Amino acid sequence: MLPKLLMLVAKFVTSLLIVRIRESEASLAKPGCQESCGNITIPYPFGIGTGCYLHESFEVFCRGSSQGQVPIWFTNTKNFPILEFSTDLLRVIHESARSCAYKSISTGDVLNLDQYFSFSQHHNLYVAVGCNILGLFRLDPWVMIICESFCNETLIPDHIGPANNCTGFNGCCQLNIPENLTLSDPIISYKKNSSLCAHAFVSEYNASIFYDHQQLQLPVALSWVVAHTTCHQANKTGDSLCGRNSYCVDATNGLVGYNCRCRQGYKGNPYLPNGCQDVNKYCPKQSNHYCEEGEACVQTYGTYKCISLHHNKLNVPVIVAVISGVSAFGAIGYWTYMKLDRIRKTKIKHKFFKKNGGHLLMQKISANKVCVTTIRMYAVEDIEKATGHFSRSRFLGKGGQGTVYKGLFPDGTVAAIKKLNVVNADQSTSLSASGEGLVPRFKFLVKHDRFVEILDKEVVQEAMMDDLYLVAKLAKRCMKTNSKKRPSMKEVVTDLDKLRIVPLELILTGAL
Image 1 (cartoon, rainbow, N blue to C red):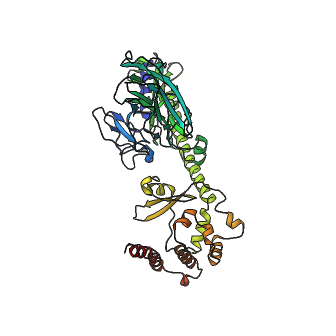
Image 2: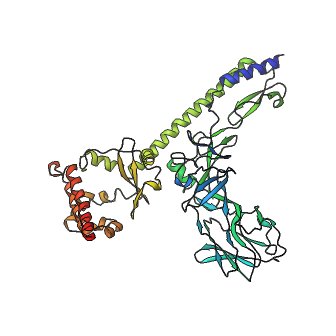
Image 3: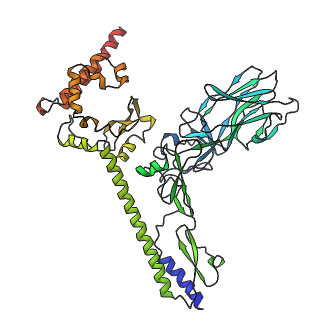
């Protein structure tokens, strides 16, 4: 009786004393976002609707269909019905290039994948289907690879078989695709007259090939990465997109970047903060089928195990003390880890703020040497939200040093935000180190009509020199140390409006 009693007590104590962070069964989508379309589950970083995807490359449009397929758009506006998502692979449907009339050469649609995607080298093949044809596949503007397909037109079967069974003499031929392939530009060339249609395409190596006069639709596996950096760099800067109970994996598909995986004992979406959930959240209901007689089932992180309850060695107080101690230690350890991790990330952000000139900017603000009424400092998270994670819909322009986006803040503030192409650690301090400040140098260049030396080439080429000169003069007035000699914001707006009125008058005059 005693072993059975101890087992019951252990189960009861375990359910009360194990301190765990319990969360409901997590959705694979971002909280508050649509998780599926038809019978397809759409995991973050992919998503439907604004704010539900990481950035524009992972946006999914749910249009619905009788087959439950979901169209996803890439930058070239090609539609891909989705078959399946995984942590580093996206299976879609793609149409073949087709020619149904004898011509010396017939080309298909050129397809360039988005920068975060490539045709998976390990899951796809180049395939050409037809009798007495050449399938030409372009690797770049100057290089092509070729396969030949021969057959008797009267004997070609409707169903040829898997793509990897193509021999070149059974109505289809195949070629391995290179690593990091983002271009699909198939070409069909007839070796002699033929009354049959021919096809060329990229498809999964085990896709079933059917001969048809209609355009073929075939499954294609696309590799993807969540970011264009390595795990080491992401962890060093604190910018890793992998959630709790997950780990980072550098891409091996030819792309530069990384993906995330749930740790052993966990499953779910590793790209969400709490997406990886305990596989065995509780001991089995029929734990006597899992544990031997005289043992109790005890929950641990990621799994559960059996603890021996020999009555001559253990008693109830010992079991309670052990479980309570281990649980408390685990809870304290986890809390300490989370606290230290937040401190580490804060230090990293402070380091980069200082490294990229943040303190110099604060000094300028405190010295009241900036020609603006109010200056606010925004966190990077606020800037990302304001620009829709630097969405293309917020794109304003691009210069030699970066790209400018329109930022919309919750308080109604509208700002132009420039994202640098390359961050140079010496960029913010080089002028101070040399003893020459930015403001004195700008004034010197304006005075000697040399201010174009510090302007982007695009600005110099597109703008009128008279306009640039007036803007430079206005900026110089804003830099006066005596506040009474600086123009008011109203005067600045009025002067800038004059620059817009003059070109409009010129246009109207020219139209007359």
